[in-house]
Image (cartoon, one colour):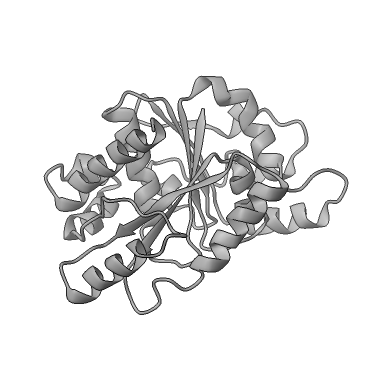
Length: 256
């Protein structure tokens, strides 16, 4: 099982859209078995796939409970090849509880929980909160690849250096296989600002950038109300076609 973390320290850059779309395209177009992990207290990925709840086990239990069977916190969806490990607001408490618990390792709990189910999936995609806290560190420790969605605006590159340093520190200290797979430009519009921002990012050798960018589409907002992945909701929209191309590019890079 290859594990991919979708992360950016900024909000509003289409992290959840990217995680859900990547999982959906891998499952439906490439026939891969995918575990989608919601690692954001907002629980938007869980809501999008119809598994948000306060009555069932969630990633909070994975991080805090001892000897939990990870299957208890994994929910089926209406897609045969997509399961979800949901999140909700209890993740705030869980993060604090993990930080206060020095009786066992704090940074490796998600990795330990994913190991027993790794043989059941081809890919695990983790939707992370716009923060560096103990649950996002757990995600980086459990991951093989990191994808950073970036929306071009005045503050687009704020926190990018800090995030790259966190990835490097995690690789050096806890997870030598971790790599920055690339930055993915999202919500792209054909304006001078977006073109210049994309050109600038691609000129920075320390940040690999996917050739594919995800075009802005009003259909994306509609798809969230429909609780349907954009590629299913509006197959011919620019964003849908771009996510299909992006996943193909990502898979191609993995074969190099």
